[in-house]
Length: 94
Length: 434
Image (cartoon, rainbow over all chains, first blue to last red; front, side, top):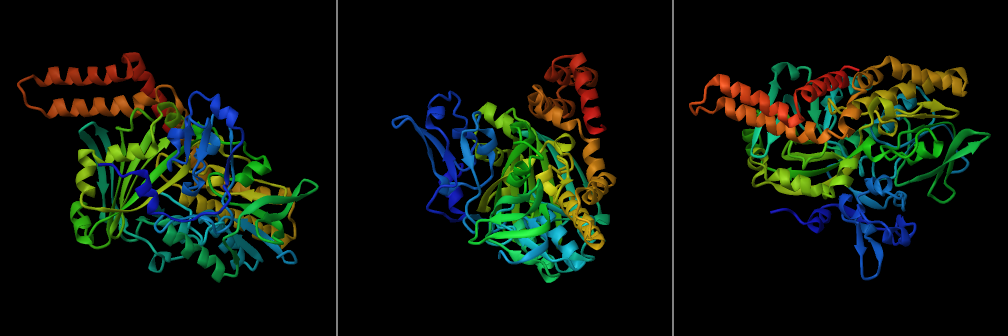
């Protein structure tokens, strides 16, 4: 019934940079974070804890640039800047 | 770029920045208007409703040429229960002439509005990120951009860089927002054949309808909306970020659940989702407004938390603050006085305007939304109200007196007792009448 996030993001025009504008400052911090709230609150599912590799993966190319992760990460462990000028999302409707 | 000197650099070509740029360029100031999007509005999002009054103050009869969707002639408020709703609405022909408000889409409106500033002489510098403010002796003297040789110097920088406002943080005028000072909104654009849309919402021609709803937000403080555009619907939900963190719910799952609600399902049925989008909304209100000006800078719009959550007004506050900042800059320019003291004119103008006064009136609301009992207000109470309405209208042989007593009990129990019901009532009244 519900639309998968991949299908949702597919509707947005992206121009992805090669370099991520989102950086996990310290993966150790993620390993020690019990809540891992970023795995839930991100509206584009950018962050996912990879238990096998013990790191948070960052699908920055899916980012819709809302800024939630920047202020909601309990450890402020995400370095967040805007994508370079002209990169990132472009809405058709907005 | 480095050789050019501007009177003013405006960062952000949203409603606030474009209003400021237009005001200043019209008065002959040399203005640069910077935006990081491919075009102004490319990254912007709102519910959204555009109001006449504040845009008209800058561009008379703008609606004859601006890209707008529908004239809002009916506003509905739905208090949702799990499979029900208690509804309020107001529809009035008087909202048509002149129109009070329109539904709109930012990827269409923002480029038009910024275009007006360009036509007045502002220099557009798009696809450009301002990475930092240039400062000399504590004074802001320009901006550094991510373009090669990308420094721009000016007598004044107007910071209109939106809710995240990295520049506002760089200035130190506000710290990082707390998760309780912002909500995250996710929205879908759903297309429907025009005739079907008009029939479903009881609309003729260019009439439009807005629906706000509370309740059914998975025990979180939040508000949903469903607005009619020409041949699309804007359906979204905004939830407080502190609640999202607590509940570990994905924001789009809240939207998905609402799309299955019997009140909403039938209105969007058969529609095709054309776009998914997300954005933060400032919710801190009056208490989160930072200092508005300083040595070489002024700050406007979302970057200054200027959103009236109760009336879902934002773009109009942004436009007014941008205009007032622009007017203060024009005055400073005419006097040749770009001191911090000269820009205080802007602070005073905001204080005298509806922006300050409306936000002040609702200053207590933020506390209500972030309180531990927010779940009561946004979840239990709407359900209790629906249960009460259901029982009152159900004819099942139970006497009206008994029904009324049960309804009052239900509401009382939802908030945890008589005293709490009274307290919540008083708190709510104070929040709305600060």
